[in-house]
Length: 387
Image 1: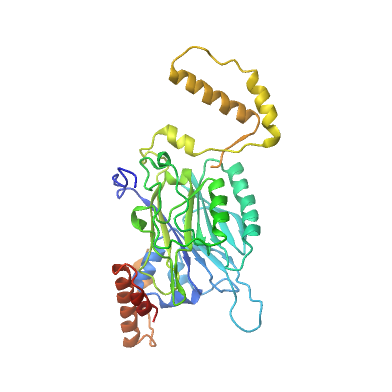
Image 2: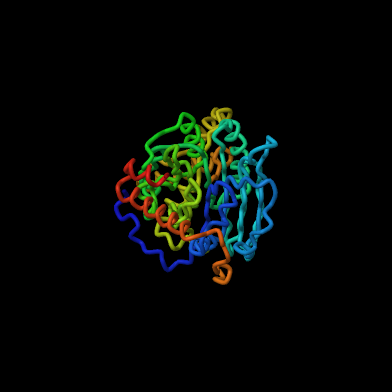
């Protein structure tokens, strides 16, 4: 880990929270207790994947009356059985936002945080989706974002159905005085066949995965737990600008109704980067990605031949001259591309079917989960938890 990692206290800062959760059926909302509901609506933006809803839900005002919704229908291909997919986003009513793009696999929203803008995207890649085709479509969205919003922080989370193991290490300099480590930890060391394409794609677009490198997820917790196994397939990514506003990312294990666990990111709602002590040069460097157009290689080298470089000067002066000259020329030739509650809602309501046996089963499930975690993911405890 980075030497002085997480030493800076940020508890005094106002937090802005975003949740990404594969809820495995929106009807699970009805089984949440008041404490779990409070945790969910403590977030400013909430994304649910696999809602299985073929139309926008009508009876959720009790929990989410202070939110506006963006809904993508699930698809039902057969007469019998449930629909597949479905995405639902809740955005606090006191926030202004703009929908950048929606389809069956994602929702991207541009949020206004006081005088600063922020883009949050929720992704659901089904296990049987054509990843190369999906990434091609996603590339178009990210390119549009880099062109129209080059200095905006971007956070992308959701169920990628991809096990990335320990991939996505980054240079230590990028993490200097930021709340992430350059290397990752993970309880899931498996790498899927298609994962390398995903990781390379995200890295080429300037994104860093947060799982396994934040204060609340230093071990890289599993995000999927079921009788079929356990894995880390729910991921959250951000660009380097986003790292400057990130406070933390955690896997919330207090909500165990789905076989997936929610991922929650906490961001500073301050309008400046003053809360981060990163050097300005590091921040500026982290905000740019140089993309070289092979067709302009000759034009670039020809232009370099006509530049007169100074023969005398300090090392610092010569270094700055070289960097500024190369950068300026790249910009001229379009080679350099910048990518960079109200508690009354949660009073217990009548659930005559929720008997003492249900309470006992719920208590037993939480106890089994804690044993599974405390005993370093012992298979026997995992079997007990799944049963």
